[in-house]
Image 1 (spheres, one colour):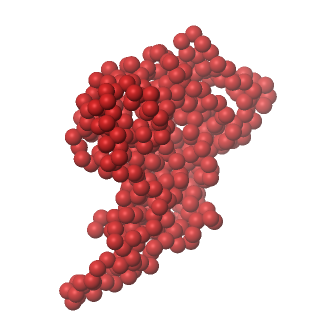
Image 2 (tube, helix red, strand yellow; image 1 turned 30 degrees about the vertical axis):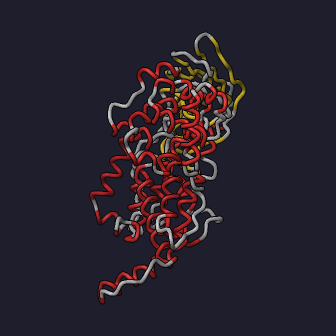
Length: 440
């Protein structure tokens, strides 16, 4: 019902230019929603709390987890709706229990570690349209959230030797008046490494690409071997950003890395060699494994390792006039790190070239001069390299803002963060409309 009301507001706004350009947003009278707990909790990744650090009070909803794998960390979030929902959540006391294959773990006497208002679906787009049209969106910003979520210091880890099964999350909410309300049970399917080895293959390249682009929302590290098989003959998978993605996946799960190592025996030499190079780059000690290989195989791998180029530091964004793609290559690697972890740090680094706005002005002046006179600039200057990086930064950020709500939350917070340089904040406000950030 809440989503339906919000979609009606969206339809009205988008269908009427007059409303957008000439009127202030008017409150739409609705029957008040009673303040009440949402009895069905969310199961989400424990990393959500860290991802929300430093963000604004209102954020996009985290992805619900329906599947999990050995070694993964899960937590719960409890929601409420209504005018006083935040107070209701904060004043409550919570107990949670996780049951899996005959064992149970309890978390008692809990209070929220943080409470966030959750944006309705499509809210970011509507607010961006209103702001671009110079419309007073303050009242709508208050209306775009109809529920709140409370997070807790609960960290349930799927057992390392987990077999296939179902984990059940249950709990109770005790109000400030002492009333105890049972929460509805939620379940997560636990998939063993053996099962993923048999059933986790990708049906086509699109499914593999989708796995990569949404990885941080639904991490599945044990499918990496299937991805390596899918991409075995694809040269693009050996580019720095593709390697950075796979290395980050291996770093994120030592259990999945160990399982991969055990399953390489039946693979062909080229795939095994590439996987071993990835494991080595991820920091794993391969000494014991290499001793199980023949002397000829050991020599082959050591030769391959010596010939392999070390990954560049993705955070080193210094421009170089002799290497046009130095900065953009590293930005692609930074996006790979984000796709695995959902962390702010790599995205913040991607935004740094926005500070080179003046170099874009130099570039456009040179471009206009060329269009008039046909006279080309001799060589590649550092200003032109920075201008290209500026455009690539804005374009990639705009693309991720459109498709990744978490990145939108990052950007909205940085616009109000006093530690972010003013020029970058200004450019973050033009990601969708700036001509420099469109594909050239």
